Amino acid sequence: MKYLDQSNLARDTDFLARIKTAGFVAAITVTNESSNVPNHQRRLAFAQTYAHHADTYLSNLAFALAADLSITALASDSQLQARMDAIWDTFAGKSE
Image (tube, rainbow, N blue to C red; front, side, top):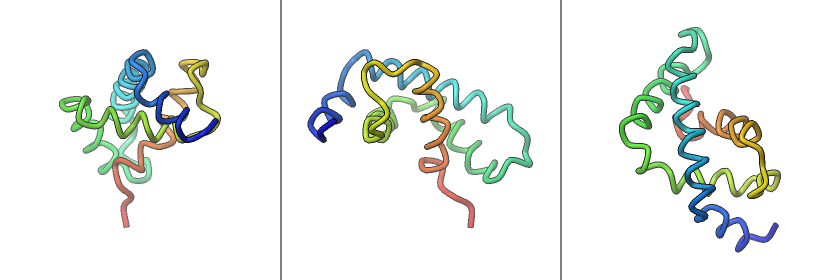
């Protein structure tokens, strides 16, 4: 997929709706995870922020997911969720 195709995917209304939902699923999962999970405090802080301001992060999350060449408009919800979960710490920030 070319960069322009990825950019167009990141702006697609249906894709954005799916990404927004995947973000909420990730936020809820992180809220319920054990405090022993590495980077939990930052992950939790981003989950809480996302829950209140999802639209603020939606475009960046969509571009991050669309940049993954394995993600296309035909990606299943479980594929999108797996990638969302994988990039969560990128947006939460890593503990030092």
